[in-house]
Image (cartoon, rainbow, N blue to C red; front, side):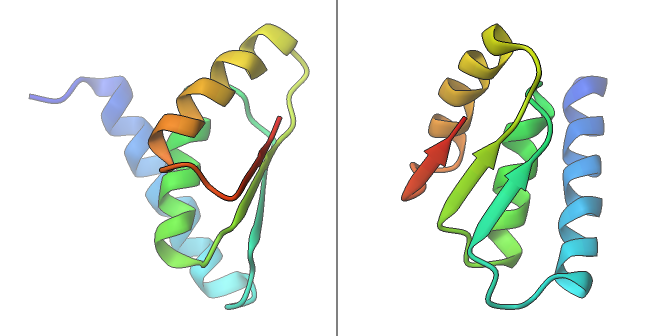
Length: 85
């Protein structure tokens, strides 16, 4: 069983990565996420599956959520070379 939120996050991230695969440069190495919620980690993982991402930059308005995102992203994306939040 998979809960609805997880399924939605995975589907949204997959759709974003698919669009990136067709619209971004094949040699893109930096990913900027303008999201700090739970979706951020799903997006980073999905985009790293289609591009050689070395750095993940995250921008968000709420600092406490950004700190949580840093921990979640660090774990889920297998420690990218650079993670800036």
